[in-house]
Image 1 (tube, protein in one colour):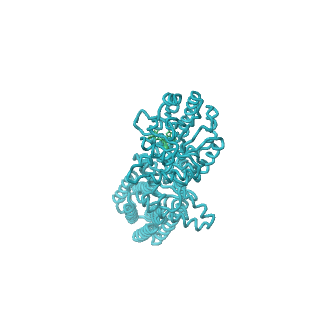
Image 2 (image 1 turned 90 degrees about the vertical axis):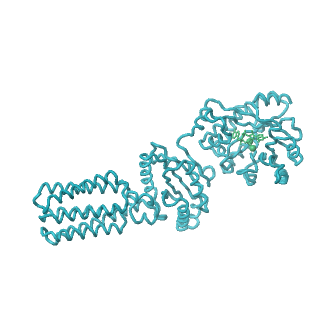
Image 3 (image 1 turned 180 degrees about the vertical axis):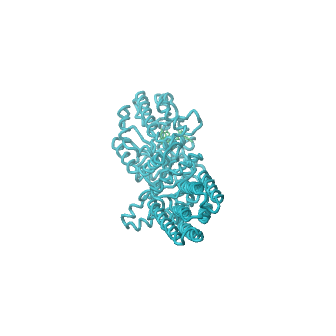
Length: 587
Ligand code: C2E
Ligand code: MG
Ligand code: MG
């Protein structure tokens, strides 16, 4: 029945009627009572037709109950609360008519036992309604048995009292059982309650073609608050969080507390991007850091499948540094499938862009390996999109390793052709891959395997959505540096690459974002900023590589500002092995 669904999660209503009163359970119970009641009346009327004032009334009563019972069985899930009340009142009137039509005491008392069915309805409704049902049934029972001359006046007291006791016990048991599905601190459904609600949502999604999504949130600071200030403060904090989230998600979505600081939201029909956007709004709504996992149910999956996937997403979010959202998709998007095939087939290309000294731009001192791959289905896709897909589908590690191995082998051949100069090879690494266990060991393995010297490798930490300054990343970078590998912070000065990085990431190079170069001649020229960055780098003893130089003038100005290393179309576009090896051999 629709009324138990929408607001199930709200504290007030959860207290008013039992959460276990699901639409299916309610309508099936009502249908069973109506059908059995109708059949019993018809059976008794046929068995002892002379014991009634009017056989026709009894058969009509039985037929109405049976027809309504079938209707409720078929369409009960659409029933509204007021319609359910109406149904209960109608059934009470029908039983009363049947009892008062009885001409014999045995028959009248037998029919009066049907009032117990009315008492069972108290299980599915708020307390006030349960009391109303039981009072109506007991009162009608007293009146019906009292006015029929067939039974003694006290017969009504027995049947009515039994109805009252059974109604009370059933309503109470319903509340006790549903209380086991509520979290006492927040009043939200607990894990058990949520799992049942999720199973219901999935069975509904299967029939109407919806895609429920789960957003699993963990309030990162809760453990510390609880340890420092106790359980009461912890509960207060969670209540504040729930109130703030309710403002964001409204009353329609189910919010439940899974365990400790973990909450889950069930959204009925949203795309993964909408669910991710919802998670961002929820994180912004509270003053504490939150790690979030998001996933969308796929047809054929069970509740435990989706729950374990969203849990994996949350663990990933926590592992890579908390206070972020991680999406875990069930199926790989088409680009990822093609990328995986390309990786397996070795169909990934690597181009090399020269890095030069501004003081002697004709000499190439290093090269940056740049991945080139586009899916056949979308040849115009940008590299940034490819990397994002690879990161979201955990293909980034394999992709970066392929590029690193290829670049090391190519650089080895280039070095062999120009032994007189020491070539530096820069390779990009995603912040996400850095957080994976054993990253440093894998790099070392590739270096050993390809024979490329560690001190001639620069790893450029590039970032899209992830921080590279988690403890595991930092320790991997330190381990690599101890082996002689140098570290560059790529796209320095933009979004994720902030000044604080210089503090946390062991750094040898800063790669200055191309936008600084491009804006040198704008109205708000970046020259003063560039001057400051040059001074900062010098003070920190970090070399800067300026990116995106496209004109001689830019090269000139940057050289005068004190920058030494540069890269850009002006010095050379990204090119294939043959072209770059030719240039190196020629110099
Ligand atoms: P990035 O590491 O900052 O690489 C420099 C980007 O600027 C390259 O884009 C390059 O083609 C482009 N570029 C070079 N000179 C100029 C110039 O003068 N003007 C302009 N406008 N652009 C210039 P690309 O190749 O599309 O790569 C984009 C980004 O993709 C890279 O930025 C890097 O963050 C990432 N990437 C590339 N290869 C890999 C890889 O193997 N692994 C990972 N994780 N990321 C990679
Ligand atoms: Mg780079
Ligand atoms: Mg860059």
